[in-house]
Amino acid sequence: MTMFQPYISQLFEGTIWRLLIDDSKDILAIEIRNEKDKQVSFASIDLSQGEVYFTAFALPERWLAGIEAVHDGILLLHYYKHESGPEHKAIVAVDAKTGTELWSNYSIAFDHLTVNGPAVYYTAIQPKKLYILDATTGKIIRLFNDTIDKPLDVQIVIPDIYKPAEMLPGILPEEPFGNMVHYLDHNIYRIVSLHTLKNGLLQQQLYILKETIVVYHDLLNSDIQKLQPEAFVIHNNTLVYIQNKTILKALKI
Image (cartoon, rainbow, N blue to C red; front, side, top):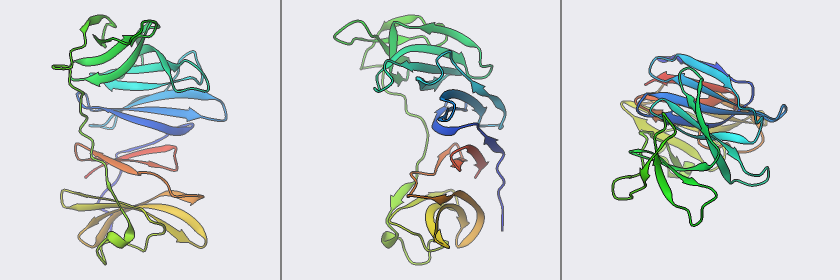
C-alpha cells in the first residue's frame, strides 16, 4: 500500500555532502561534492512547492569551498584556508533563488547564525571578536551581543536512534541487521530507517507505517559495506531523505 509519492526527486552529479534549511523562506540548500572531478557545487530547492531554483552553482575554486549557512533567502558559502585543514576563510553570498552572487568578503569568516543574522569575525585580528553582519548587503551592522544575539534554531526534527533490542516486538516492518534503527513518530505515522542483510548484501531501507501497515517504502542504499548514518529529517511536515548518496527526495507527511 502506497499513500505517499515524493514531490521532489532530484539527482545530482556527485555525493550530497550537506543539507541546510532556511526556516524563513523554506529553502533547502545542498552541497554536492564530485570526488572524481574534484568539483564542489551547490543547489537550492523550494521545500514548500518543490521548485528547483538551481542545481550546479560553482565558485572559481573547484574543491576547497562549502556551505556555511542559508538564511533569509541568502546562501552563504566559504573557502578553506588549507587543503588538509578544516579552517574556513571568506564569505561569498548568493541569492538562494536566482543563483546570483550578491557580494563577497575575503577579510571575514563565518562563526554562527543568530536570530539577528550571521555572526562573523575578521580573520586577521586576534583575539577573535564577533560582529553581526547584514547578509543581504555584506555590511557589518554592529558588535555581537550575546544577550540579544541568540543562536538561531532551525525547526528540523531528527529521528531517535535505538538498538533493535530496545524496540517493542512487532513495531518494526522487518528484522534489522546491526545495532542501529532510526525511528520517529510524526503525526499519525511511524518513520523507520533500518539496515537489512539480503542474499549477503547489506541494504538500508526507509519505511512509513500507519499503525502496522506499510504506507511507503524506499530502498535508500543497496550493496553497501557498512551501516549508514542518519537517513532522514522532518521539516514543517516534510520528510527529506537521501537515496544512494546522490538523489534528494522529499514528501509531505
